[in-house]
Amino acid sequence: MSAHRAVIGIIGNNQSLMEGYSAHVSGRLSSEAVAQAAGCMPIVIPSDPRLVSTHELLDLCDGFLLTGGRPNVHPEEYGEAETPAHGSFDRHRDAVTLPLVRACVERGQPFLGICRGFQEVNVAMGGTLYPEIRDLPGRQNHRMPPDGTQEEKFALRHSVRFTPNGPFHRLMGHEEVMTNTLHGQGIKTAGQRVVIDGHAPDGTPEALYVKDAPGFTMSVQWHPEWRAALDPVSRPLFAAFGQAARDWAARRSGLRISA
Image (cartoon, rainbow, N blue to C red; front, top):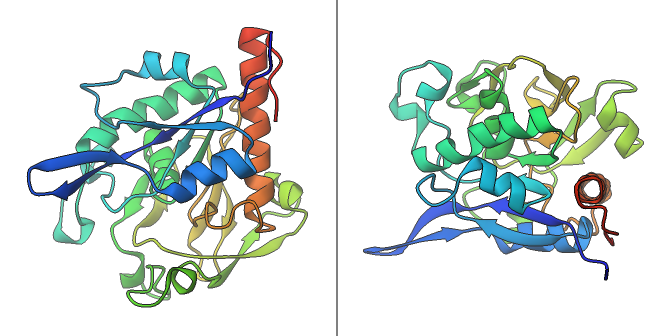
């Protein structure tokens, strides 16, 4: 048979384009990162449990990109009450991604979590979140700058130091890297089997993986989809994710999967 690319399901966000007309959307940067840096075929998944099911998504895709998004994981998902500091929510996305993460961990099906996706992985595994990092003593403001060009918003703003000889250190070839930062919430307590493998200088968790998971579970708090094919930190992360998806596809189908 002819070679084909592994398929990555990109978790979409529910967004209103105009009054009375909502859409399932994903940023173009995510699709470009999947195609150009991971070498896979991107498809956007509507994050609505009335339209898709976990088992259908697992059968359709070889891996998943858990994207960022403005709405936050609802605090009820980790046993806390809603407050104004928690911001806006997307319960439909919660209902799709949280069981999907747990199923992928169990099966060994690869996923890469980004920003909200990073937080979703932690919550799916039983962890909790802070509603606003910048309000914590000693923490910096990790939110996206309100003004400036896209380049300025996604500019490298702080370092991330990885655990010596940990998975991220080995993948990147460096114990410390520079990243952008565009998030308000952050990990409070790590979920079961969640290993925090990288921190910002102020102690904010920035990189994680799930211990003893049979598949790729690396997730990051920053946005590696920005210039993913060129950035020395983003490129190896997406390349490893893409290879994990191809390996998964090859194991389950026996077909030759191309980069």
